[in-house]
Image (tube, rainbow, N blue to C red):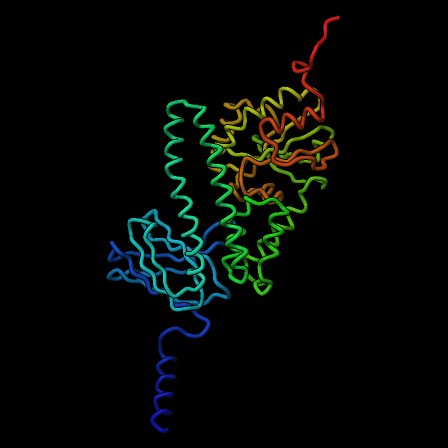
Length: 378
């Protein structure tokens, strides 16, 4: 009995002198391909990634320790390389192996949350592998100018997008008690309109309500409810290309498309001719556009150039904060191109109307363009 007591005391002493303490994490890592260097542990803060710790790499090894209120998605960055390694950190003994020449090679053990996330990644990767041949075919068809084949491949790609979305929603619903569920929900929020997002949010266990990702989902729901059809458009003021403030509510009295885009966004630039056509067709009847750019400060010249190159002859504003654009956050914009259509009193009457859908809605509001009206000779 005395021997057991002594052994217990020794164990407690050793535990207090080293190893992982309760409610703390310890990360022991190995870098393949780099014996020395510096690594940084980062986490998401508002609209950017910030360093929360750093460690030296000695003989290819490094370590971190700290505590997390709940599991959190973090990134590891090796100084002097372009690679970022993403994984979940939680209060546990975590071991990881990374390769200094590729983000594709990362092994993480000891994090139960990461284990669940890995299951999702494996499912998503299997779908992506099926899509790769289609992507290559599309590139070849585009180079050859084969628009018929491109259109056919587009429809197939949309099918895979639906499969991807279903796999994602099924996974979220099946893992409602894991932090991974609200994390994946907010990470892919751009895929979901309000009813879908409300349905998914309802499958996430309320025991996670103090978690950052759970709260982010609830905040997004709150924002989306304010910008649905029938709601008055939230007002905002932002500088135009000359630095002059322009307020949304000052544009009342016309049917207005608030168009979220950016000069660096390929799909936005591809959609611009459709907006130009709509503007030229219906402007004299009372239609207007307000462009809201998600460009950066250093991209202001490119923003103005894109306006001129694409013949966007309407009002444009931006705070040049990229995805941190205040108007975009106000409207819950998580992908571009996106838009909302407002009536003369700035009540929302349409969302994400593109191409022919926009023309059809404006025709409904203003009547058919003169060139499209049928004429009858007497």
